[in-house]
Amino acid sequence: MSFFGKNIKKIRVIKGLSQQVFAELFSLKRATLGAYEEGRSEPKIDTLIKVANYFSISIDDFLTKEITVNQLLRFNEGITTDINQIVKASFKEIPFVNSLNSAFFVDNFKRSQSYNSLPTIRVPVEGDLDFLAFMVKDLFRVSDEEGLFPNDVVIGESKNIDALFAGDVVIALVDDALLIRRFTISDKGDTALTGQSPSLDIPIAAATYFWKVSFVFLKRYPKFTSELAIKINELDTKLTQLLLK
Image 1 (cartoon, one colour):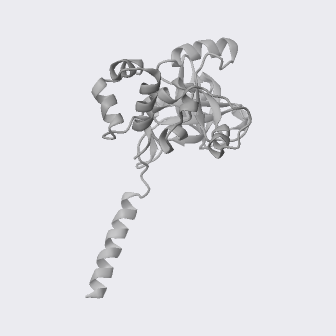
Image 2: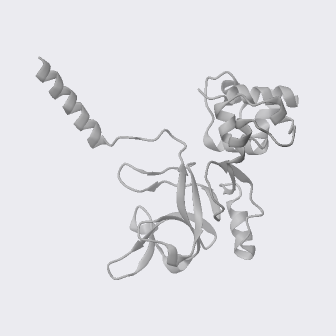
């Protein structure tokens, strides 16, 4: 169980907010907020991101430890030797596109190639690369058992088309939308952006900007074993039991 519920309750008390007011800030029901505070439920990733960004507290801090009053009041003691603050400083702030700001961002970016209009999220990635965070809106199946699901968050690095390789998963700016697709090269050398069905394929010329997906933050608990691996393990267990008889 994470510290999320305990932390949002502390925030409410310090900020003098009722459950109803706090819930309305993030489009939640009061009962849902109560369940978070009492540890009966954990938030969805989009809720976690909204709350963490609103109070300028890293997601890692929200989930893994009880936040301090100094953090909430933006208390600054100058140079710190607190290891928690050092770890927090290693998180990178990345411009974040979700369903609420996607249309506005696309329109602005096509004119200015700027991320200035976007909120940011703090994630544990390193480097000074040109990153963009994007909340997945539609199912993107990589294989029969793996893929990206709605509300997963992907982090992409800006790339020219010449820097892409066959099989790369990219965030592509196509017309007035950001889409998740796989960069493919046919036997004839033709390039395309493919989805999980031919009807979702896009000519490469239709895309104007690309961000190669480098990191993925899953909304759900990841599936570590395939159906085949599970069946093999079951057979191995049964065989072991028979040999022991």
